[in-house]
Figure 1 (cartoon, one colour):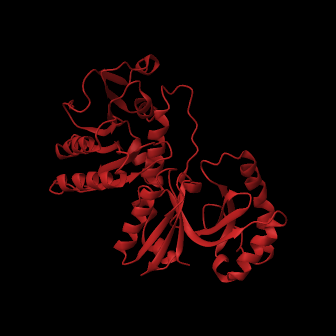
Figure 2 (cartoon, helix red, strand yellow):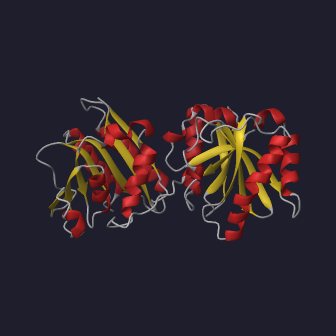
Length: 359
């Protein structure tokens, strides 16, 4: 068991692989990755130091940026045209029963960018007969709530092959392959509203969302127009200062909870501190990181969610530079800070960061 199957945004397989290489190195392990360009998944092979289950137990998924979800890769197999269920049972039986007995259920997935709707329909229908057969063969443990227990995970790249993995109960994404499926409300001014909603769901502790968002907090939205992120802040009951030279959506302004300031978001500063500062401005990532660190150094906000638009050729390197910039500039602050980042499903070439004061 020396391989991981990791999921990321299609086109970012190399960045996810480099991130896994670095994460393994921090635990005294080493390995190499085999990207499948454009698929949204990759294999990572551990060549020494730790096996795959041990690495998953020691490295928190939430510490990774480009890897959205991961699992131990148990087997790769060809699927026959007939009796696919029997073929999976046979492969897992040959691979050792004890390992998969910790799994409480099985899920079947297809790639994020799969263009074959028939494959997706087959995956959904295949779960029930596969579960019955695996449980009958003693290859699944007692059925429990889907949110707990290790899980057997099968990825179908096509009808003729399967990658069989196992995800650990306490170190996997809350959503399959790290993709929350969100619906855009008709009243939202733009689709960017989904990005901030996903950021809250992914980057904030699930059991403390009300602490971060509730209680009539104040917020600043830099680069706000037409108002997708401002709309989300208002939905949480926040009084918002929207900073942008562009026009804001009229219905949003009619709520009476938004003050529109026409100014450059990078240069504008509030007269008094606010709870939240959010920023979705597309600019050089280190410029954004520097601006955010200034807000925290001057104690103008307690929490911030902001995007870093990464350059095409050095995306992972640029993230490391931005992380170092933020950490170094805030190292001497009279308060602690916590930084988390993730390439969200609703991101494109950017990553989304959450920075907070921890005093």
